[in-house]
Image (cartoon, rainbow, N blue to C red; front, side, top):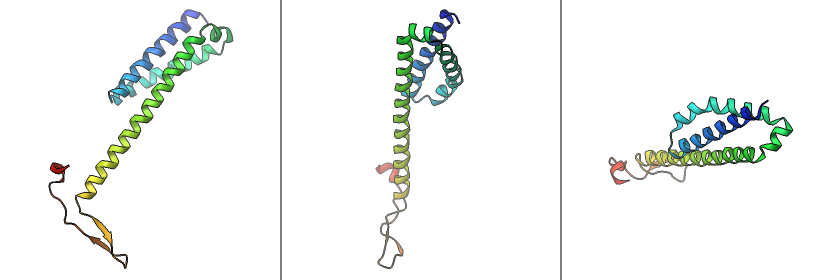
Length: 124
């Protein structure tokens, strides 16, 4: 396969990974999903071409850059998921707080200790 095809595919993959990074950083998850089909196709194309040892050896730096970009995006995505989970947990805690504090008596029966707060959103 010609080197120009490899370089073009690898350069486009690098561009897509940079675009994906921006989507993650700006919480543009729909735009990131739109890039996924192209990214997968480019990864397959580049990986297929890189199986040629001469090709892989000549473009080692480019392949390392792509691997680094992919790893960085994975790390960013994991951090974004962690943030979303934290926000969901916080929201759930606020919703539970609207119904007052629930405790248990010495017989294991549920007791509401505090009356529900009606304006919790304004207080929080």
